[in-house]
Length: 485
Ligand code: SAH
Ligand code: SF4
Ligand code: F3S
Image (cartoon, rainbow, N blue to C red; front, side, top):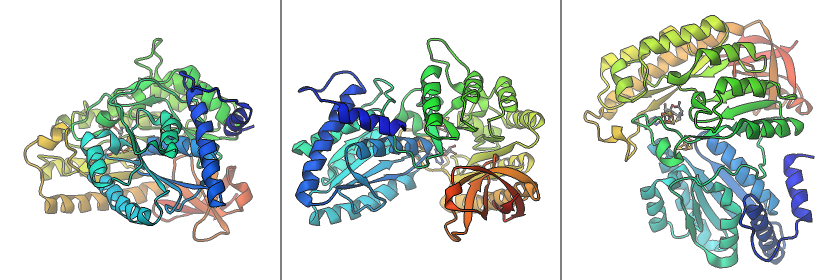
């Protein structure tokens, strides 16, 4: 029985008392039952099941949070849909860059218009953008049709908040400025049956000067290894083969636990979980990457030979202004150590162009590190001013046309070096986790190599979720075409 089915079964036999329990997660189980009966009433009145759509913006943490929200919606009797014209539409927002915010405002306008014709529809917003007081206030002022707003710290209370809205006590807005507890034992509806993210920690203490994440996700908190391993075991029992350990800075995992545990040791323990065949993790801060972790990656057979190691900038002056706590030399020495321990390791990175005060020489320094390291892929971002962060008030913000020109040059180099580096496996046979039917050609499957590159190869839907041997016949830049070996 899957974890999710187990939860539903628990709900079937669960007789809610007259008052909601005070303890979590029992309290949310009580409210999920309450939502279920309210949804059933509305469905009976409409003569059809109610539908719900959850849209996710932002990173893997938000994707994982959305899986939890979908789990609760399913348990409450909603039918999930990709269509935003649903009885309930929820946006799980991101605010890391301004354009992430703009997307949400644009779509909210559309939803508001449609709601005029369908006043029963529930519109909900959660996630990082709601943790920003100015953004939440703007939504409340300009979008009175939004029924429910909550933040990142109280996501586990979704059932309770939705119950209030469906009982006619809306609009509801509950945002906490800090977390009260880690409540993880709620149902989650995984997007993929065979792979899953697992939160190992929440929040961030690094305060890189451009970044809003520490303000909206709070201080660093780690889950205990027992909880994490327990979740990995039940996911494995539920058919999950690949696990992605999630945290803003996994390399500082475990420091604040009662009995401190290093990330390297956690990795060794997850490596022992039977049934799990692949382990990935995101994200690693270069300043905290220990030699012990390199050793754990090298020796743990299930840990994929891929490391996402955000550089942000190759200039010492900018790294200092960004508060990154490493120099370009330290970063380069680290990648040398990684490559000598694991010659085949795929490195990927994040880069920011246009940080305040950036000069042409700073850009040249970044281009130089990109050339030296040889990334498989790099995510390049234009610096976005986030209010409340130290960089927002730094002098010498770079003019837009200069940034655009620099961005284009960086992107061209990243693509050129990425193509070259990604082709190194041509001709090899590699184990590939088949993820989905190819969107353009249904006779092909799309899967992932241990290095995280994708490959398209002949196969059928019944093989999704299997690890298959594929010969990588042709590299097409950032992906391969392959045949069965
Ligand atoms: N915790 C992760 C990254 C989280 S945000 C880490 O430290 O690596 C993902 C990426 O968004 C960052 O690596 C950075 O490159 C980019 N980013 C964050 N804030 C930004 C901003 N204000 N403007 C542009 N890019 C930003
Ligand atoms: Fe943001 Fe830096 Fe924390 Fe990453 S490590 S989330 S970039 S503050
Ligand atoms: Fe965005 Fe929040 Fe992730 S701001 S990048 S969704 S932690």
